[in-house]
Amino acid sequence: MLRNITLHITEDYAAMGRKAAEIFAGAVKESPAGVFGFATGSTPEGLYKELAKMHATGTRFDGITTFNLDEYHPIQPGNTQSYHYYMKERVFGPLGIKNTHVPDGEATDPLAECARYEARLTAAGEMAMQILGIGHNGHIGFNEPGEAFARLASYVPLTPSTIEANARLFEDPAMVPRHALTIGIHAIMMAKRILLLASGAGKADILARALQGPITPQVPASILQLHPCVTVVADQAAAAGL
Ligand code: GLP
Image (cartoon, rainbow, N blue to C red):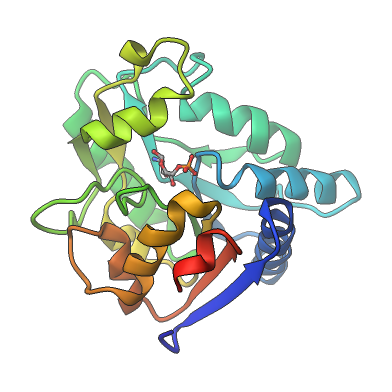
């Protein structure tokens, strides 16, 4: 394993959430008014539950500013599958965070929305920590595999494999949006620390390719090998290939 990558292997999903919460809360303690990057998906749900428990017993998160990685497009914020909804229910409400940013899934001009979001991110200053999950095809945010790393925020068509992977969450698979707005690789790589989470046997192969394989835009998460400070928390099943 590269020296810039610290790996914590936990027994199971619940322990992954606890370990990640301890690390995240430590970063917030160091930077109580810092900027933090949030991810959605099933993987960080355990982390968010643990943070909510910490908040209930007095840990404060309300001084931070948050930026989410991505949002489907088009999608209404009230749609239960939108990342707006996910964050309101699991993070912003339970942790009492007010200063939040999520790309606008209803933007009529998605390219202009990407530029606006990128400008807000840049103006906010250094991100203390970026939470990441990893897609089965190696995507981070919605930066899908391709010919080049997408540097800035972009409006992207989702790959058939991502649409299929996320269909499980929608009542009707035909309702999965075909596009998304995502921050780019540059903003992710500029974060002071990365907290990458992975859970389950289905992520074992891609996690190994991301952390130990060639650095290639075909596996967007492989760029993290070039980041100076990455903490990976993976359960045993996801870490099996490392
Ligand atoms: C989603 C999100 C990513 C997430 C990934 C994995 O499509 N855009 O930010 O990390 O796919 O999701 P999950 O944690 O549900 O496996």
